[in-house]
Amino acid sequence: MRLLCPVPSEECPTWDPGPRTEGFLFCLQPVPFLCCYRTETYQQLQDAQSWSGQDVISQVNALANAIVLLPDPLSEAHGELSLAEASNFLGILERLPAGLAKETAPLGPAALLAGMHFLKKVAALGMWEPEPMTGPWEQLGQAVVSVASLVLEEQLAGAWLSVSEVVGGPRALVASVQRLAPLLSTMLTSERPERTSSTTMPASLESP
Image (cartoon, rainbow, N blue to C red; front, side, top):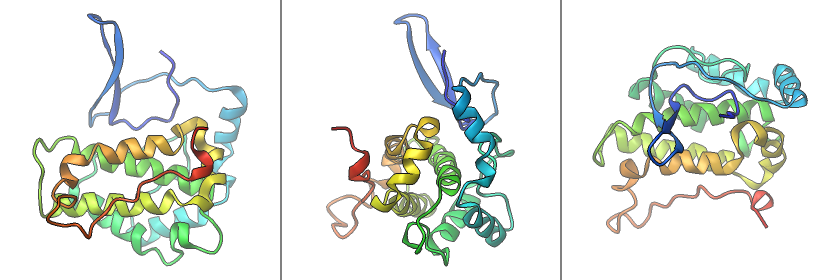
């Protein structure tokens, strides 16, 4: 099986011998996997700590007093992420003075890649809730949509192209947010028409 790495430890590849189909399940324990890169892609990832956007990564981690965004895309965060931590870290991303996609200089590929991995890790938390939830879980879903909308701005199309081979492009982020649908159902019902989700892809990255 060919896997693009790094992959979040929450996404475990599976093989169903009956219909002979590949898939994945969410899991919270790190599992071994094989990485397959083209030589030039791997070399680019080795140099990722020199990519633009490291200042945003450092600022977020300093505000959180924790490693929220990984400066090295070839590494993987250790330990589980709690609901409280996820909500707190998402709040920092939303309030970041530099403004993520709203900053004067667009978010660099290093920060975009790190943010993408963090959002996928947060989205995996919601997969363990069998029913639509309110309170903290609903707030988590709203925060994920808000941050995802920031990194899907049109002005970040260039950064997305730089990291698309590793994370699969904006569609991978949209797919992660959609997995939170049960948590978002209470905020997207007709009773709350003022709330909308703006997780759309930059037009320049849409398939023709």
